[in-house]
Image (cartoon, rainbow, N blue to C red; front, side):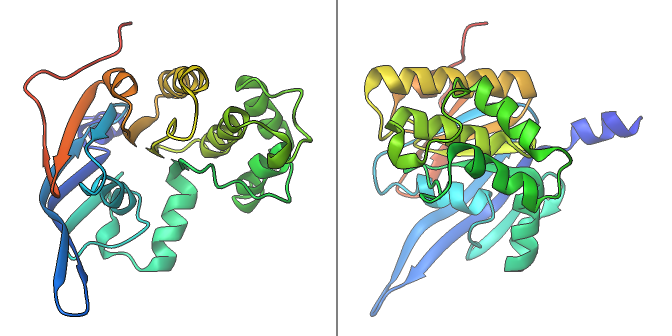
Amino acid sequence: MTKTQAESDVPMLKVTGLSHRVALAHDTLTILEGVNLEILRGESVAIVGRSGSGKTTLLGLLAGLDTPSEGSILLDGAVISELDEDERARLRAQRVGFVFQSFQLLPALTALENVLLPLELAGQEAPESRARELLERVGLGDRLHHTPRQLSGGEQQRVAIARAFACDPVVLFADEPTGNLDNRTGQAVSDLLMALNREQGTTLVMVTHDEQLAARCGRQLHIEAGRLSEPAVAGGEAP
């Protein structure tokens, strides 16, 4: 078996016995319980569920933004549930992209500078050329020098998507990427997200309330009261 074949046999994400609890003043709140999950390389997966079901907590754990109370998380061959905070930060910088519902752009920086920042931190060659290329790809070639407050919500999210793809992540996590957008703008942003996922072969994992966006993913998972399940028939975007 070749190295490439061996790597392709390893799932991008494998979660085993994952639980997450938070200590309260006189009790313990269980947010996730006994989650098992496997996501293959290049898959697009939507996690759907009502508010408070634990989906955003699960996404944060998968991305290494927090550590579980129990269980293991394997991301691209690394057991991130056993890494310390600094090690998880390095792994995220090298392999993970994240798109937030609230965009999380730095307000004092221009669109170009927001996309440049992770490239410069990673020591990428010709970072400005790469940042300009990505902003052109998301339709913002004429908005390079605008700050977030000079951009619409849809434009800010497109900057955030360009930033997330800047360092060629192996997996992209998206937390309600169309949640703060109107229907028309949300559709344009979801078109862009799915197109970049196909073009770059990046594994895509998102949580969303948007049923139409979820249906465009290759698989849909449902979370209810901290427990994950998969319907018998999954959705999928037409070719």
